[in-house]
Image 1 (cartoon, rainbow, N blue to C red):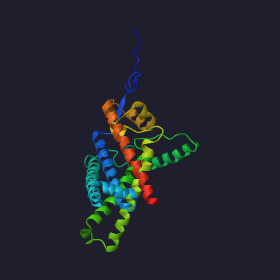
Image 2 (image 1 turned 45 degrees about the vertical axis):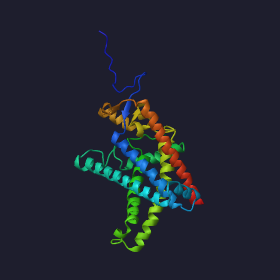
Image 3 (image 1 turned 120 degrees about the vertical axis):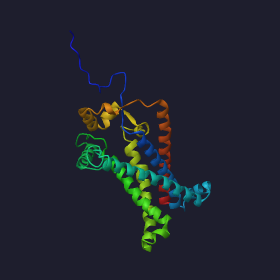
Length: 285
């Protein structure tokens, strides 16, 4: 009787690529709202920040003046605020109500830990040819930095923006100098966010050698077995050991979704880089 050969169910066959879910549909929708409203806020906020620049005046004239730009800026701010509050509610509900493990600490958490510091140092050493390439878990240190930079920016930029919008109300609680300060804080923090997202975030996410020219996973929600192993080997090994790898199995993204994602992604990157160039022109003009 021939001996039966045991085959690992997670082994990728030579003729078929396996896919694993990284982001849920809700997370992808939230990201779509986030980057759409951020582009809208940047496209309407920068002309007001650099209103003396020729491109700002031309843009304002094209949409009906700076009054129209301010209206659109407030609209995008409201939508983004609602999305942010929904996200905070979801995190608190998962962590405090549902007692979901790994939300606030651990290998699957967005909260930085000591391993992230060691991975960052190891990455710098690898860049200089002084050590091996570090291995990463579900979220790399730069992804956590991106997340908390946006989270912090939402609080600071959001509060200062609403303080300017509803100045008579906030004047009951804040002294006059504080209301003057929020104008500077809102302007400079928003400018920092634009420069960060359109340079550092774009490079870290899409322009790295293993993702160039675009990381599609945030649009399709899935990634191939090869991408999973190469980008986050520690997460892959952990899921393989615990038997959770099969639970993450997804299906290959349809061609229409891939093409649609490319159009949306490249358009967002083009708009972002254009706004980055206009920002630099306005800043040094």
